[in-house]
Image (tube, rainbow over all chains, first blue to last red):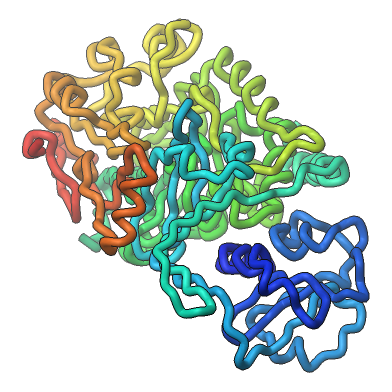
Amino acid sequence: MQLARFEQYDQERLRIASDNSDINNSEEEGKILYMDRKWKVITNPDVTSYGQLTFQECGFIAPQEEAPVDSKINSTYIDIDNKSNLLQKEIPESPIVWYPLKHQKTTMFTSLKKWRGVVLKTYKDCFLCRLVDQDGNSPDEEAEILLTEISDEDLQLIDIGAVFYWSIGYQINPSGTRTRSSIIRFRRLPVWRSEELSEAQKKAEKTLITLGIT
Amino acid sequence: MLTPPLKEEVEISIFGPGYGECILVHIGFNDWIIIDSCISPSSKEPCAIEYLSGIGVPLDTGVKLVIATHWHDDHIRGIGKTVNSCSNATFVCSDGLLTKEFITFIKAYGARPGLTEGVNEFDIVLKSLETSHRTPKYASAEKALWKRNGPNVKPTCCITALSPADFAIHLAKIQLKELFPQENTTKRDVVAPQPNNVAVVIWLEVGDICLLLGSDLENSPDKRHGWAAIVDSNLRPGGIASVFKIPHHGSKNADLPEVWQKMLIKNPLAVMTPFSKGNVSLPTFKDINRIKSQTSEGYITAPPRVKRVKKPKIVEQFVKGATKSIYQVNSFFGHVRFRADLKSQPINWKTELFQSATSLNSLEW
């Protein structure tokens, strides 16, 4: 659940951090996964892969439930509620490392509104989606979003059931300049693996027997 | 509002929308039936649980049946908690859903919390049933789901499913099989397929009172399923209903005049919940007029159209530039309650409206 929360709330900031080349030239030589005013999360350069997952798969987007891997990942991964404890622990094989930041200026994004969206129907020039307010302050909405608002790399991800996040707010550059910004990012979900589908079939068979359904 | 019905009183409470629908029926003598589930906007609890707890009904012994008429998000929110709390109730769902394919599909998606609410809820239901060793009941056309024998102490009560028809179950199984993910395809949220072939319509008889609860069943050009199959069936229970839960939010494609003529009394109590999806809002002005031509006793849990809550100016500017259209899902919430004394002849219904609920006659456009 911690990973899922990390992904849910910080995906946009995480992407901004990772897309910014200035920030990526870090002295720690790892790839920056996430950064805010106080913390920087980078990949551990001594650990190049973890099981079958790449860092991107396990660090950016894949919640634990979608990536049944070595339990070490679960125990050493991002604990966003307890960052300080994680820092104090020595975890040599952890694929990520948290660094405290004190004075470094970064590109920040201040969100005024953020929705989680699900594509319900696609049209030639737009798609119908349900928008759920991530702050829980506003009722759900349904919108037809124009395809011109979607980046080229995300266009191919638009399909019924595809999940995206839409943030509207201010981007604050290292120089302090504020720019109004609207970011729509589609989740890059992993594919269904044969093991997951077999596991589901086993669970279903067990349920059918337990419930006496023939 | 929080006064329980008398022992010999029948009550039908319809809650919605807040995006959803839930029906509660008191069949006399402290026995209750829950049909579908939605969440109370104030307490965030399932409406049925909140209401029953509020009037002091013990959930473990008072609730006899929990019925999920289908698995769309707007009918199933909170049903997992409801089944959990009503620990001795029998869970009923469509025959089309209790298949190996559908349960495998639930197990695949249910392991991914945060996605696909309807699937997650169904997963909770299955886990609860497994833990409590309860076997769910299949609902299909003309099948009796529950019976209380009378008439010495309590009035007879019989609950019968009028749908899905055998042919609809066949179609549903094909439809649901296609939902099961294929290896190496991208994971996505599940969007329920259309048309809805699994909807369970309920016929409820208690003493001399009959209720027709229409779920989201629509008409079909093929008479082997949909409302035409119900009207034409010679196996369905006889009698005519005095209360009608209008199917599919009053839409035209769920309205069959023969239902009003053959299955309902003249001028029945009719109630529905509104629905919105994109630029589609149900019921429409035409739908309401059509229903009003059938009964003067029509009610709705909330007005069908809502104004969007405005956001900060900068947000609205971006939203306007990025969208072709944007509509707020109906956030109003209301409760329509009908009560009648089982002993009175003729039956005299008392109607009460709470929160946003209103009569169709007083709706303004």
